Length: 179
Image (tube, rainbow, N blue to C red):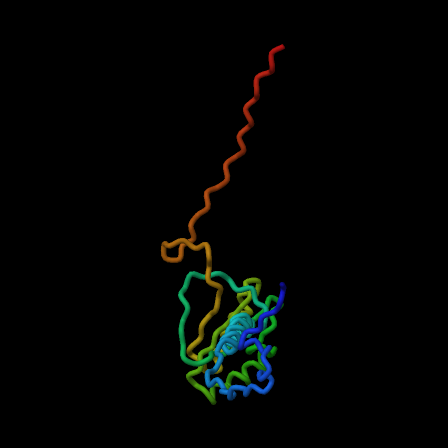
């Protein structure tokens, strides 16, 4: 009563062992999904590492409300850290060596822009000394860098005053419970 019925295409027939295979046709399409995956991973990697490639001298910049200045070429960056050490890019220099290096750079590129970064804990006199060296080297396009302030008001760079805290009020006394 129970039995197996073989259909013509199931391979159960006698001549199916010698059936001819179909010809191999290569697919000419390019699978772009792996390419897109790799490109997105590279994009994320570059987005993360690009900010880390900035000048590596740790300087705590003061806040400012001024707009950023754009330019075509990469400027020289002179940094003064909180210890008073002077750097050109990431290379430390003393003041006479910095003056010699800046004069050599100015002879090669007289229109080069120079940006100065100074830690807010640096003595004003030290910053003026370094700025004098930069100007004496012949550079006329000198800018000071600072961090963009987050909490500045909208009144042309004025800081919105914070109201003074009130004196604490004594807590009202609760009436004694009746017995």
